[in-house]
Image 1 (cartoon, rainbow, N blue to C red):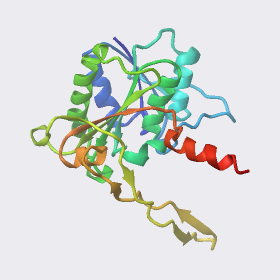
Image 2: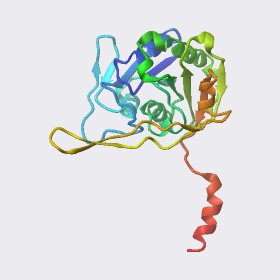
Image 3: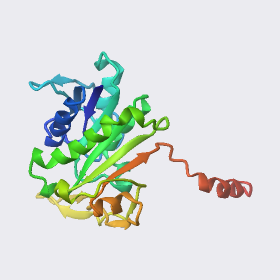
Image 4: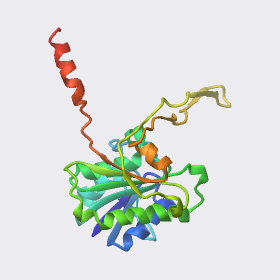
Length: 253
């Protein structure tokens, strides 16, 4: 198999290297990743400046853009082949529930899916502050490789992708794989308003909210129980259950 690998933590991130190492046992790996951290960039594309790929000594390609840029450019002229699978990660930290709307990791996989390629996003559901180095990602990379080795028999519906979250801890503490739905978070913590040394107001976005919907069957619940959460994502955000209500409402206009 031929893999196109990216992330949102940057081309030098240890999670990216761990995933590249694991994929190398399954096929040919090409890495196109941002030249620095681009967390929470979602599916943003860079339209106001040129993008310049740079090949590094280890063969990875760094791009001065977003995760979605990396996949978009790679599949639209940078590469001279069509990858069999787009892989994004391994992200430092979870991408659970509403996180997928902001995640650059998920966005890179989503961009691949938009451009007609099967895709998977992989995250290590462990606080960033507790991640020490590449060895912390090895188990997550091994789980991802285990899934990818069986990928030809999967047959996902068109335009869907997989969002994989691997719990922290040792593999001996894990409880297997779980197919899940997205849970939901409570609203994020309050924005912090501060003052810079020159007396100007500055603002820090608050931390993520705690899980609000973490019932059995959700990705939050699976990870809390030590399972590797696998959530199929569909980029069609239409709320079909609301269409009947909306149709009745507009008739009154």
